[in-house]
Length: 291
Ligand SMILES: NC(=O)c1ccc[n+]([C@@H]2O[C@H](COP(=O)([O-])OP(=O)(O)OC[C@H]3O[C@@H](n4cnc5c(N)ncnc54)[C@H](OP(=O)(O)O)[C@@H]3O)[C@@H](O)[C@H]2O)c1
Image 1 (cartoon, protein in one colour):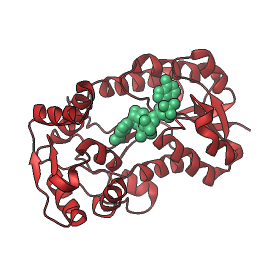
Image 2 (cartoon, protein in one colour):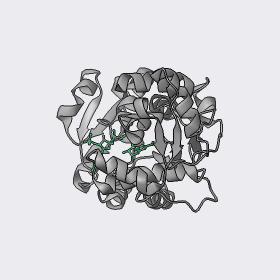
Image 3 (tube, protein in one colour):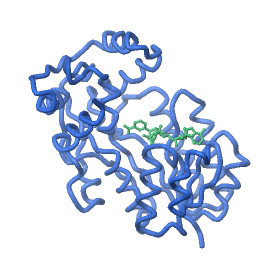
Image 4 (cartoon, helix red, strand yellow):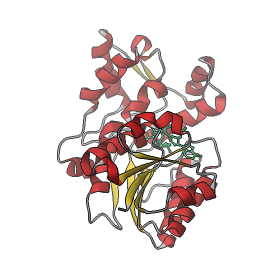
């Protein structure tokens, strides 16, 4: 039987997609691509076939994609040769006879000229390689994960407040688990060929709204400070992060400021068949767990 293979399956999104997909179609139909099988013992324990491969190793990708009908291609980690990796995945999938590729991109309004370093170019090149490949393609344009906020805002958020170069724009943030569930629904369904979905929350919040929500967690009023980008970067470098990482983090808030995540499409709610988790529901849990 042809398999549905999920890449990035030792990552946070890919693992959740593989598990959710297994619940829907059975482990016998699911395979997982991982760089290090030792990190995938829980997936193997669920009966998922674990295949080893690295986006930088075309021969391993060719082996891993054999007998795969649908591919869930989870985009790679930054600060590496992302374009070569993604080109390798598309070429290997096409050569192996994969019928349908599902790709996780980042939400990006069609007419926007805003670009996040590495990410926007990677998505553009990958989507055009997929379009030229002749394989069926479904693109899931994911919003900024709410789950990323504790890291992006910093460990002292609940004591100090929300400091970010995000302006006063709103973002339709979503929980990563909801995005994974939507991916599993799409992968286990039909009729998604040639479709793009912009997957985000059904409500949009500003960072001032986030500060108000987190004030309830902190038990005191927390300010939102619309920081200059340089101040945000300097603050995170002082916590020990390399400056290129802090600069990259700042770009997600610059994207938010530019309205990149402001669009509410309803795609996520329609696919889930329910309201996605809202920031008011999810952020208190998220920030309490991180404490
Ligand atoms: N929407 C958002 O807010 C947002 C935020 C951050 C990232 N992203 C993007 O969404 C993707 C999934 O998010 P996530 O939270 O699951 O990230 P994650 O936990 O960092 O997972 C990334 C996955 O990519 C795999 N990977 C990295 N380099 C690879 C390579 N050369 N070959 C094969 N696999 C490789 C990693 O494998 P290992 O386990 O072996 O490292 C891991 O499984 C990220 O990779 C990134 O492109 C989106």
